[in-house]
Length: 298
Ligand code: XIL
Image (cartoon, rainbow, N blue to C red; front, side, top):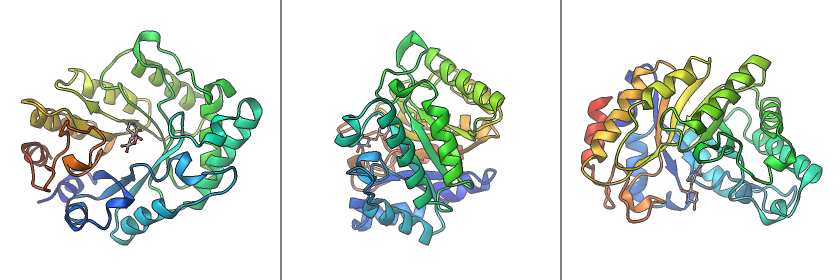
């Protein structure tokens, strides 16, 4: 079997990978992508600096290559990400206050409208919460436009593409901790007030151990009435790598609203974690023990 086929047999879940447009000419890469995966997330091509390099000038060359590849093969697409404090274009970094606020909402509206009907789930807002124990929002120029910037972004995304699932996405949320609890409280508040949010993404850039309450954390979010997904999974190499992949997979399967898993790249040589070999395929495209453990868990 394959990751994608096995995940589909488990309640219609998807198994996806982050894809770089620049690698779509690499036949080893594309063969694995087409054989194993049923969802793609553009690794960088839909970020603000890529899609709106100057103000109100939009360009979708790299993103469209990935979108066309995926749609042609019936793969789902996770849009990533409409708003993030990183990989913003210089022109937007130079704005503040109400000017940044309107540029930000315009960006969400234009990009979501361009891809209307094609995106399964959008990461509307990425990484807006602080690391560590503060349990608060990250200090960023987006946050400084007003504490309601996240809900304004979700409302703009819903208006522009009513059919897409709208997700909040973050990292270091791999268990019940102050950061994940702060996000949990935001989602609960959004659901209570009717702010349109459908899903929460757990990036899951993992080290050499997995928090014992990883599954419980997914479940508490699901219990708020949102879907959850593992969105950027990669795991430090070492003796526990395969077991951690298996545990994450089982955790998702155990939560009925966990609708899919995405790994953040295909081969180790494709990973942003250079030298850490954190993926399911080695640099030559061979299946690793982590692959077999994941497939066995599905
Ligand atoms: C990373 C990409 O993998 C790199 O190619 C890029 O240089 C930096 O961004 N969290 C996210 C992703 O949400 O967008 C990041 O992707 C990894 C961390």
